[in-house]
Amino acid sequence: MTNATAPRGAIVTGASRGIGRQIAIELGSLGCGVLVNYVANEQAAGETVAAVQQAGGKAVAVKADVSVAADRQKLLDAAIKEFGSLELLVNNAGVGPSRRDDLLDTTEESFDRVMAIDLKGPFFLSQLAARAMLTNLLDVGGRRGSIVNISSISAYAASVNRGEYCIAKAGVAMMSNLFAVRLARDGINVYEIRPGIIETDMTAGVKQKYDGLISGGLTPIERWGQPADVAAAVKAVAMGLLAFSTGEVINVDGGFHLRSL
Ligand code: NAP
Image 1: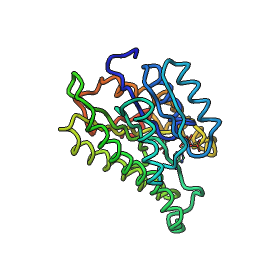
Image 2: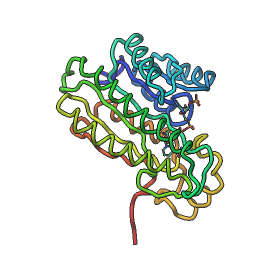
Image 3: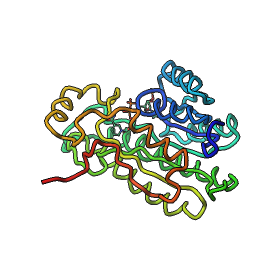
């Protein structure tokens, strides 16, 4: 291990691409063992595994749908088997609605799909991970592990053409508070990282629209966010730099959340 406080075993959901991949690589650079979760894209997951190893970490790819209970158990079992213990869970996997519909046309099918992947999955995976972390010995700082939830500025910014995503992310924000309060006395800290507009496959279809908004002054820092911006915040958590903070919201959004006159 290259860093004394780095987690031995970490799960990063949705680590085959985008933000999750970069988080996995950053954790690899700390010498962590990283479980690289994916749901469909085996080749991309393999590329992440190679990049984590190149960065200095151990990695294994595990196919699992976070919305399915048996798959969540599979993730946990694989992490314990590969790395001996779980000290960090990053709930990163997430989807937008397959089609952006006006609020008045949102279907139950889309609502259920987005809720299951973006909110139910992270909630019950956090429950499983927390139970496993409770069996970890306290480290020198009195800690057993950390949970990081990747939410979104959509937790508070209303987009009426993807209401189900906004509701799910608002739920992730409360979920972070709940787990933070419940687990603080057990030595497990919980963080919500709230990315803004980040350049990944998820935003590829709306690139032109956001190019215009960003150059028009939507964000005080006038550029796209990159997966590395989000990964740097996770790295700070993994290194134990935020040990006296829990339930904290870390905005990684170029200042989008600021109000100004
Ligand atoms: P992305 O590029 O679309 O990648 C999504 C990742 O999630 C992929 O690794 C995908 O796996 C995985 N995934 C999807 N459904 C899954 C499921 N049911 N079970 C397990 N894994 C699943 O997305 P991203 O932009 O990196 O977003 C990552 C997170 O950041 C999401 O929670 C998203 O809501 C949040 N976020 C993104 C932005 C942004 O601007 N990009 C802004 C705010 C928040 P496969 O490769 O196998 O499909």
